[in-house]
Image (cartoon, rainbow, N blue to C red; front, side, top):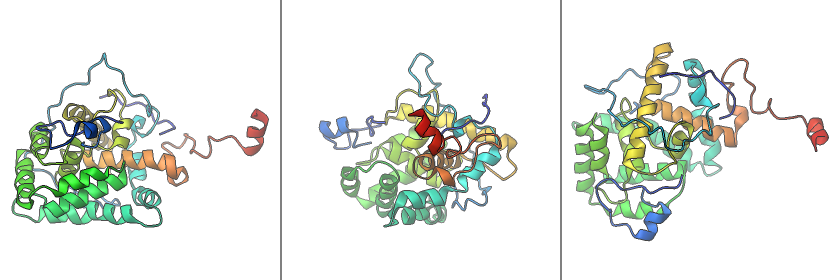
Length: 300
């Protein structure tokens, strides 16, 4: 995999097309309503590994399809693991900014990064409960695009069924296609939500399918919330984790951590670019690249 040099600068599809309709109306489909890292203390990296883990075999990105070049000069184009780590270290600050005065996302994000992984890891058989699935969905919606109908659908799943399906999904790993398909049999769960479940319990093989991370990966077709699109995205994120580990001195990079860094960079660029470090010593910060007030007046 060829990495380019660091540079400056940094969907709406349908989710839930894995195994069944999940009880969603055609109107909801058209609106896109249906769509693992250990506890992340970003100052250090965990060395816990998934048993018998190996990169999932994913289809190659079709060359003839239109590609997303929005962030070709962003974090994805940086080959320095220390710069990725520096971005990741600002995750909590970016979450705090994104969360706003109510701090809802901040609390949910801490739970998702710290408490939920510990709970899953401590069980004889890895799984999530329905309450955890509902809370995970609240985290997902607060972190990205809010779709209240999904919460109603997820709440209709019998608690014992959520445990059964999620346990089966974890047991199917590292076969990501089979694991995601298993979780998609739950109402209100599509590939993106399924990926969030798998990423928190198996960070070495899975990455959350966030809009921000997917849009950061060049060479992908237009975003669709489908299993096929997720596997295309995941393959590249896994390869990037491998590449970063080749030059990293700070520990293990996982697909989950790569996604978190991409989300932090993308959201930080929009909301609080002054908090983000430079991608390279020679690259300008977002504020450095803006013309001065005097120059802006002259340009007008």
